[in-house]
Length: 423
View 1: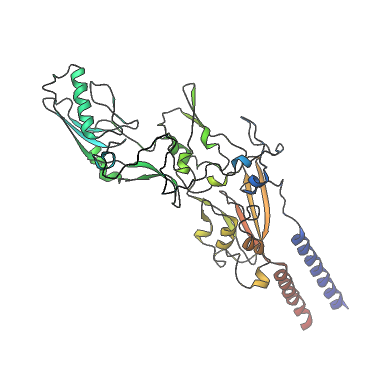
View 2 (view 1 turned 135 degrees about the vertical axis):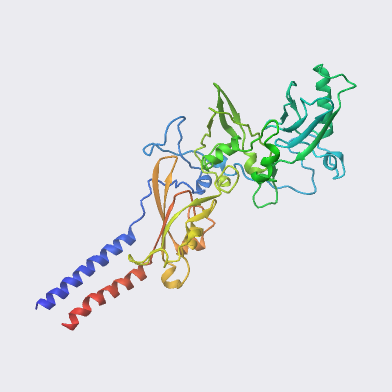
């Protein structure tokens, strides 16, 4: 009789456990409101977050905003080869590679190292570095703009400056200017490339250039620019108002358009000084074209993932490795689910699996959670509401299907009942 009561007690506990499991499976994930951060569907629906000027994120105050104007904001453009690219100018001459603009002496750029030699002018001779603003600073002379000028024309400007300063006579001012080393430069690339925007080329190893530049006059640093400050702050968010970045200095402020870093058009990058303050306004709308690696966005992001089959298992046995927690910026929930091995295997038991994504919305200060089925992710990855973008420090967890849960419950019941059969 006691054995029968114990058996019924075990069965009742198992039924309660099964009921709780089914209740958990039927519950929807808690989402404070429909506008999940990282969901580009907001642009199609025309909704966004309500942002107040100079106010922190408030989870109790949010609303809707028309975001349709931001759906293609800062998107890279396409060009055709059968038409001249005007770039906003009225008349752009079509040149050949043999023209002097492209085939002559390469103009100077900020950071270039030159050697100046003046006959009977030991106080002026030496190595000089073109500074960040494109100026060449020679002792006793006014700083002269040399950016974009060939080295022969720069030598003539130095001769003329020496004569005008009455330091040399016209017949004795003989200047020899030579290029010692090209610096790394930034150029913009747009059109039919995978990552349009601004790129830095010709990076030199510091050990190779230190000996030549240590005794040179002037200095250049490509890391004291506005774009570098934005990247040092872990990059801009997808809701940034990139064409109205505000720089404040000594009580003055200026608005700068930094969208060229993303689109490949020209943009003005300013050298910074100590005490500068940079403010990046928010549009209140998620702009999907800002979610990709550039100079002012993250190269990658850390995502916390779990694909534990049993409570005693571990991520090593679930094959969750380094690339399952470090994703390229611009990845979506589907890529995270595949990296965490949530997708694949037996279709009947694995297709109904569920993937949960928990992320922090910086606009409202809320932590939002959404749930998607594996089958839905695989069949509708093009819908942003189904397959949102991943943001830094998002958490992704995989849950087994209801069929797998029932199978494991049945196995647990067999393990519990088997000892009673032996008594």
